[in-house]
Length: 303
Image (cartoon, rainbow, N blue to C red; front, side, top):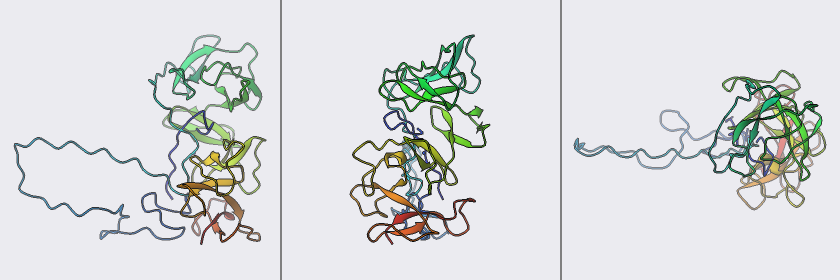
């Protein structure tokens, strides 16, 4: 199972991250083995082998070709967090060390005036700060100024500036951790959060959040970013939490829909198959690879 790429964006409020076990290059159906080359390595395919000629030692070295951006795979989806667009990233303080002055805290903000967090800075600490898990107030999604205590920030902010205080990760950028066993790391390129773990089959998350796949072993409570008109079965999606709670964003190869990625239902393999149309409740993990407690997690996919 491949590891998802984390990306972050305020527009989707997603952290912001196992296909039915598909290789991200080959996009084979669930359970199918990826094609192998002559040496037994998964082959990305394409192109004839290079037939070298006599080299010209006076010729300039060729410019290296940029490596292509890997495609998201089907069950791991496109991730939760969208990468910030544009702007100059500037980290003036450490979210891990909280190395600001007295009565200040280190917080993320948008230093280009946009709505995507792409930098850190020291901001005033609220004299009576809200704790993680409590409601909070923000001066604006890109300002970085909020009512949460040091080591947390106001996340999932609505149009009135109301949100929920959420812990930043502890440890270090190289080894982020969460001290609360009911939370797990959700690491983006700009910062890292500790989000509640959950069960996708019962969707045990607060109102406004869904239980989405964070990585190949973990599901986390993340704000539902689907909006009022999209996010249902068969609707197109770009990010995992662009689907309604109880659904997952996967490749259109496995779902009857329009678009390259579409929403489909999670399903319980221990119960009667209630997937719509020709879709079948398909194991989310290959035999013997499911993390403890996730053995019955499936997705409604085309056979």
